[in-house]
Image 1: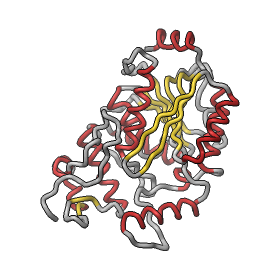
Image 2: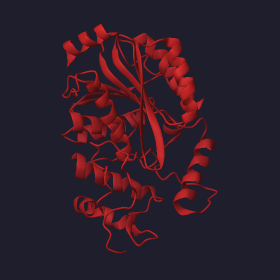
Image 3: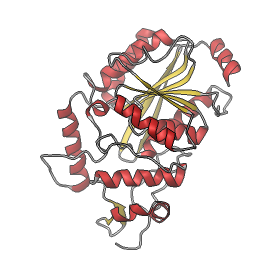
Image 4: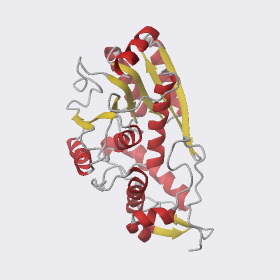
Length: 319
């Protein structure tokens, strides 16, 4: 396998506080999570790497990362659910932390006075895990799938570091984003969302086929999603664009309940529509934050309805 101990993927574009900004140290990871040794293979250069075509290998790698860098010892969820790549998920959290600091005299607000709402919690509970372990924020996570909610709650209950700091709420009506989740008395400092990317399962399969081709150089008629994912995690009627449109429209009704709303926008072609929707709904401020690894770019679009004076009062009363 050669003597190389770090994977060759470059991730220099990751946030400067990201624990996995450098290439993965497989020696350290396997020391803390020995099972990972079974999934190390040589690449074309003879360097040690992970078999990214194997969903099990991907999950074990991310379990090792959470164990080594975040102190999460138990991260189990059904095999069919989406297994998120930890570095990219952590980048979103770090960038919204910077967003809060930008409007707090350069200081990131930390501690359980800060509440983050995660739209689309998923079975892995990954964004709240990172937000709690990095900044000690409090989280509310929502999902339309009761099995995902149960899985996330089991993860929370199984890890003392995050137990009692994450509330999992089932969205009983998939037509809504916020309605039925946020009450008149809830105060949310920042909303995060990683919308379902595809408009159909066929589109999702085509995307997976392209990924496998890029990784292996081989075509396949029956792609296996190497990061797994059940339908509701990957597919939304109308795709990412429609999800964000619904989110923006509903956010107006909670203009005084939330400081910042934000969402990932993965498709560059969706940005024009997102900006147009925001222009029509007239928030006080809109911010775009670019992020991404070496092989994929995406961005966070964030907006707030609070005036400067309202923002000042919000910070004074909560932070």
